[in-house]
Amino acid sequence: MPHPLPRLCPALLVLGLSACTGLPEGTRAVDGFDLDRYLGRWYEIARLDHSFEEGLDCVTADYSRLSDRAIRVINRGVDLAAGEVDVAEGRAHPLDDPRVGRLKVSFFGPFYAGYNVLALADDYDWALVAGPSRDYLWILSRAPVMPEATYEALVERAETLDFPVESLIEVEQGEACAPWR
View (spheres, rainbow, N blue to C red):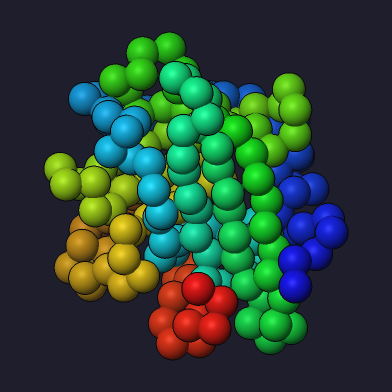
């Protein structure tokens, strides 16, 4: 049963207040981005951990259109030890040129944080996403399991961009998540 005030929400507010919509220095968002192809479900394969996701596995993000430029975002994770689901709903909008993989995301009214797609498969099967600083990094996949070679290549790519990849945690997306899907 979802919490009335999910853990995902309070820290997302802090991210929105402190970080704005920046792009980590020395990185670039992908060009030729197609938001319609990006919509749908993404599975979190690995992340740099934060209080708003601490202890959560089975993490997914679902993106759907609200309007021409507005996107609905539903982030969902499960604390497997407690058997509790956390859900946060927000909105996203393209930043500047919609053909560049940069969005601003808000879970709290006017407070937005940067969402920067740094690498993206040609078939939109995986993505490397950063927040506004090197403290925020996610490896995402359209499937709950990512091929090891793809994962290693994305970690290597993040390392060349000076992200602290030694702090990445892998997110459980296996059989333990089945009851929550």
